[in-house]
Length: 365
Image 1: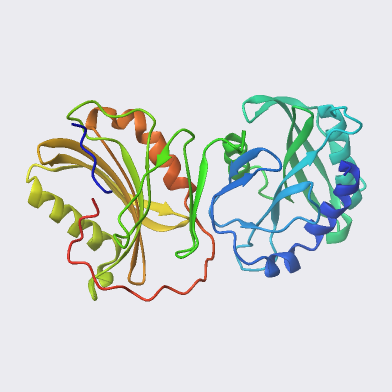
Image 2: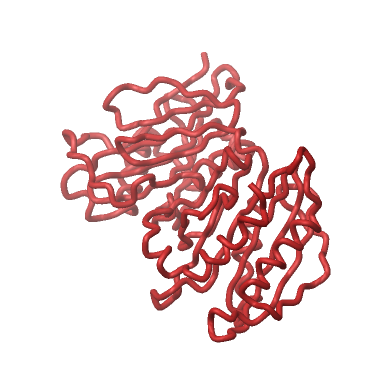
């Protein structure tokens, strides 16, 4: 028996983008949340991950599907912006990449009349052929400051896409690593996979296409449990990923995530003294500090590997736990990691719910 445990036109949009970038300080102050790292646009049919510390800002037009600002180190006006802009087909005809690039140059000349551009270079966006082009000029709205912009442009289906980054010329090259990471993370097909949102605890997570949700006991702390399409072999640990929101016993929150993990491992060792920790260290969950531990052992004679990421907030422990047979871990690890990276807070300043009766067992599976 298989073992399962709980666990409109593009041209019209560009002036709005220009105005948004010029007025970034005011927009950033009004932006509010955006702490998550995964952005999915069903309208644009794409997903993209952006670095921790960047903030989302509502675009001035539906064609600007994502607008990001990096807060200045001194807490002042943002110095760099990133955006995803689409150019829908007009009259049923898809735009050419060069058309989109000329529109971008026209936009940039709106703030830097002396702007020049480089020759397009081959690139990739969402695994598809693209062109990378750079612009440089002096921003007339910022005392003639030397300003640069880079864009990766492609045509997907009948729609043109531009992923852009704009900021001061000083230090621009050295800070392009963030933009390059965002470019590599860009994928088409936003409908792939499923999205789970728990309004009570203000969290959202994406799980892979083909995985299915299974019922979990009410009040057990687990808010989501999903399993992959393929069942485990007889006698093997079935793969399972859970998202949990658990109340910590009074006083135990003082030790933070490290103490929580120590107690969890201690409980697991009571069942299997030969348990081994394979990996342990700092991590992120929804952009917030977390701890991750990967360990392997046996329970009721069945071998398992657990990949656990934990974030402590007050007396709440937020966990994402992937479990499977040890022989399947390398195959499923990327799915576990993708779910952890997709974790988002839907209301960053939401008050914590009133704690329930404390649990007497810190073993979350």
